[in-house]
Length: 344
Image (cartoon, rainbow, N blue to C red; front, side):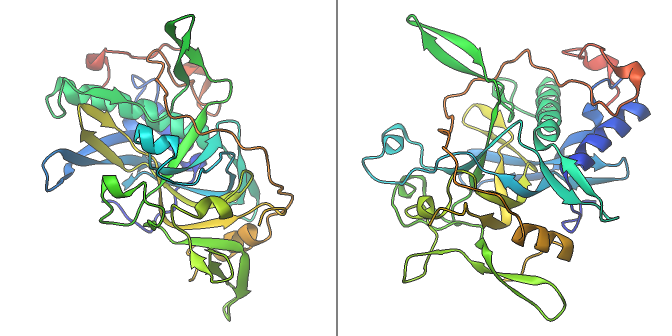
């Protein structure tokens, strides 16, 4: 049974993988810490898209939708304005995304008040590799369409054209793109129109007041003297390279659509943004985290990176064994296609 109230951080994912390996020595990469929940199924009314739950066995005790919390996670991308002349409109890319780098970490206080470092990319890669494994197994059992292409979420390489030929080129520091979902009911053809709002409320982490119970309440982010709420036509004026992002990243849904099986990444629920110093409702985090968001310092606007869109996955990629997993598991090969050797 999944509980929406459970807070999951990257370290929780990494530790859950370690527990799965200790419990099942044949599971050398912790794939059994995750599952595609085929009973949690939803088909879109048009019949062209099917959704399944993607879950983690948190600390080996309960299955939870995989939604990972991040605190002051630095966005290093560049959000371009939407317009009919935008190259993305020509190519059909209308989505708005945060871009993080794999090397970027963030810190948060644990239950004892001690600051711990969180590695989102590491947790994300474990989840992405496990998703690809379970999707492939689902195809072998005819639970998923065996002819569909599996697209892992964590992308370590891209296809580039050199000397007239396409080659696979590794990223030095793989980007992690996380969508900000448009408001419900938005049609695909409307996404290039510069006035579409978002499903998530976006708050300005610089504007807050203390509540009677010692918490903080942030103001919703707006643009201009008329305090216009953020939409796809003005969000680039507010969110700059170097902004600190807090919220939940949703990895809890496998999508089967258009000859592909994917694990999309998107923000879920409220988003809190602390913009760089030189750029122009009630928070659901616990009180220590509220103050951590509000008091974050030393951010300046950074030279943004272009968001990568044409990315191919390196199919030979495997997740390295976590450092905190017992020594005897280190250096073992991945399982590949040998489903019979793994009791999942």
